[in-house]
Length: 164
Image (cartoon, rainbow, N blue to C red):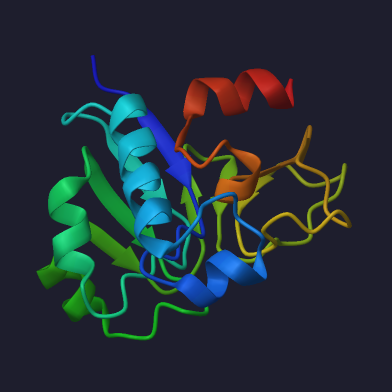
Protein backbone atom coordinates (compact mmCIF):
# COMPACT_ATOMS: atom_id res chain seq x y z
CA UNK A 1 0.00 0.00 0.00
CA UNK A 2 1.38 3.38 -0.96
CA UNK A 3 2.14 6.08 1.61
CA UNK A 4 2.28 9.86 1.60
CA UNK A 5 5.34 11.85 2.66
CA UNK A 6 6.22 15.51 3.15
CA UNK A 7 9.46 17.46 2.85
CA UNK A 8 10.58 21.05 2.19
CA UNK A 9 13.67 23.10 1.50
CA UNK A 10 15.95 20.49 -0.04
CA UNK A 11 17.70 23.22 -2.06
CA UNK A 12 19.44 20.60 -4.20
CA UNK A 13 22.60 21.94 -5.79
CA UNK A 14 22.96 25.00 -3.54
CA UNK A 15 26.31 25.16 -1.77
CA UNK A 16 25.46 28.67 -0.55
CA UNK A 17 22.38 27.31 1.24
CA UNK A 18 24.38 24.38 2.65
CA UNK A 19 26.81 26.84 4.24
CA UNK A 20 24.16 29.39 5.28
CA UNK A 21 22.10 26.78 7.14
CA UNK A 22 25.18 25.01 8.54
CA UNK A 23 24.10 21.69 7.08
CA UNK A 24 26.34 18.84 8.29
CA UNK A 25 27.83 18.00 4.89
CA UNK A 26 31.38 18.62 3.64
CA UNK A 27 30.24 20.02 0.29
CA UNK A 28 27.20 20.34 -1.97
CA UNK A 29 27.84 17.00 -3.68
CA UNK A 30 27.80 15.18 -0.33
CA UNK A 31 24.64 17.07 0.68
CA UNK A 32 22.82 16.16 -2.53
CA UNK A 33 23.86 12.51 -2.42
CA UNK A 34 22.83 12.17 1.22
CA UNK A 35 19.47 13.87 0.63
CA UNK A 36 18.80 11.49 -2.28
CA UNK A 37 19.90 8.44 -0.27
CA UNK A 38 17.73 9.32 2.73
CA UNK A 39 14.76 10.18 0.48
CA UNK A 40 14.96 6.83 -1.29
CA UNK A 41 15.39 4.91 1.97
CA UNK A 42 12.10 6.39 3.21
CA UNK A 43 10.03 6.58 0.03
CA UNK A 44 9.03 3.69 -2.24
CA UNK A 45 8.48 4.21 -5.99
CA UNK A 46 4.69 3.94 -5.59
CA UNK A 47 4.50 6.52 -2.75
CA UNK A 48 3.48 10.17 -3.05
CA UNK A 49 5.69 13.00 -1.83
CA UNK A 50 4.53 16.56 -1.27
CA UNK A 51 7.51 18.88 -1.58
CA UNK A 52 6.53 22.12 0.15
CA UNK A 53 8.85 24.41 -1.72
CA UNK A 54 12.43 25.31 -2.50
CA UNK A 55 13.31 22.09 -4.27
CA UNK A 56 16.45 23.65 -5.72
CA UNK A 57 18.51 21.97 -8.44
CA UNK A 58 19.25 25.25 -10.26
CA UNK A 59 17.81 24.23 -13.62
CA UNK A 60 18.59 20.52 -13.20
CA UNK A 61 15.30 19.48 -11.56
CA UNK A 62 14.71 16.66 -14.05
CA UNK A 63 18.09 15.08 -13.19
CA UNK A 64 17.30 15.08 -9.48
CA UNK A 65 13.70 13.94 -9.85
CA UNK A 66 14.83 10.99 -12.01
CA UNK A 67 16.85 9.76 -9.01
CA UNK A 68 14.11 10.21 -6.39
CA UNK A 69 11.46 7.62 -5.53
CA UNK A 70 7.78 8.47 -5.55
CA UNK A 71 5.32 10.66 -7.38
CA UNK A 72 6.33 14.20 -6.37
CA UNK A 73 3.96 17.17 -6.10
CA UNK A 74 5.40 20.67 -5.62
CA UNK A 75 3.87 23.53 -3.66
CA UNK A 76 6.16 26.27 -4.93
CA UNK A 77 8.41 28.17 -2.54
CA UNK A 78 10.11 31.52 -2.86
CA UNK A 79 13.10 29.94 -4.67
CA UNK A 80 10.99 27.96 -7.18
CA UNK A 81 11.03 30.68 -9.83
CA UNK A 82 10.27 28.78 -13.04
CA UNK A 83 6.81 28.31 -14.56
CA UNK A 84 4.51 25.51 -13.45
CA UNK A 85 4.83 24.00 -16.93
CA UNK A 86 8.63 23.93 -16.55
CA UNK A 87 8.32 21.98 -13.28
CA UNK A 88 5.78 19.56 -14.78
CA UNK A 89 8.10 18.90 -17.73
CA UNK A 90 10.94 18.29 -15.25
CA UNK A 91 8.88 15.48 -13.71
CA UNK A 92 6.72 16.85 -10.92
CA UNK A 93 3.28 15.24 -10.95
CA UNK A 94 1.54 18.51 -10.13
CA UNK A 95 2.64 22.04 -9.23
CA UNK A 96 0.81 24.61 -7.11
CA UNK A 97 1.39 28.35 -6.71
CA UNK A 98 -0.90 28.65 -3.71
CA UNK A 99 -1.46 26.61 -0.55
CA UNK A 100 -3.36 23.34 -0.95
CA UNK A 101 -5.99 21.93 1.43
CA UNK A 102 -5.12 18.26 1.94
CA UNK A 103 -7.63 15.77 3.33
CA UNK A 104 -9.98 18.63 4.27
CA UNK A 105 -7.94 19.73 7.29
CA UNK A 106 -4.23 20.20 6.49
CA UNK A 107 -3.14 23.34 4.68
CA UNK A 108 0.06 22.67 2.73
CA UNK A 109 2.17 25.78 2.18
CA UNK A 110 5.75 26.83 1.78
CA UNK A 111 5.70 29.61 4.36
CA UNK A 112 3.97 29.07 7.72
CA UNK A 113 0.40 30.31 7.87
CA UNK A 114 -1.47 31.74 10.82
CA UNK A 115 -3.74 29.18 12.45
CA UNK A 116 -5.21 29.32 15.95
CA UNK A 117 -7.22 27.07 18.26
CA UNK A 118 -10.51 28.44 16.90
CA UNK A 119 -9.70 27.37 13.34
CA UNK A 120 -10.51 23.89 12.04
CA UNK A 121 -7.19 23.56 10.18
CA UNK A 122 -3.56 22.59 10.67
CA UNK A 123 -0.64 23.84 8.60
CA UNK A 124 2.23 21.78 7.16
CA UNK A 125 4.99 24.07 5.91
CA UNK A 126 8.69 24.69 5.26
CA UNK A 127 10.65 27.90 4.66
CA UNK A 128 11.92 28.50 8.22
CA UNK A 129 14.70 25.86 8.15
CA UNK A 130 16.12 25.47 11.68
CA UNK A 131 15.03 28.89 12.97
CA UNK A 132 14.46 28.35 16.72
CA UNK A 133 11.66 30.94 16.82
CA UNK A 134 9.34 28.39 15.16
CA UNK A 135 8.54 25.18 17.06
CA UNK A 136 8.83 21.91 15.16
CA UNK A 137 5.19 21.07 15.75
CA UNK A 138 2.01 21.68 17.71
CA UNK A 139 -1.50 20.31 17.49
CA UNK A 140 -2.05 22.68 14.55
CA UNK A 141 1.25 22.86 12.70
CA UNK A 142 4.19 20.74 11.59
CA UNK A 143 7.39 22.01 9.96
CA UNK A 144 8.80 19.67 7.32
CA UNK A 145 12.05 21.53 6.57
CA UNK A 146 14.83 19.02 6.01
CA UNK A 147 16.78 20.43 8.94
CA UNK A 148 13.92 19.24 11.20
CA UNK A 149 13.20 15.87 9.56
CA UNK A 150 16.64 14.29 9.51
CA UNK A 151 17.15 15.40 5.89
CA UNK A 152 14.48 12.96 4.68
CA UNK A 153 10.78 13.02 3.85
CA UNK A 154 8.52 12.37 6.84
CA UNK A 155 5.46 10.15 6.58
CA UNK A 156 1.97 11.56 6.92
CA UNK A 157 1.28 8.93 9.59
CA UNK A 158 4.20 10.20 11.67
CA UNK A 159 3.02 13.78 11.26
CA UNK A 160 -0.52 12.97 12.43
CA UNK A 161 0.73 10.90 15.37
CA UNK A 162 3.10 13.69 16.43
CA UNK A 163 0.41 16.37 16.25
CA UNK A 164 -2.04 14.42 18.45
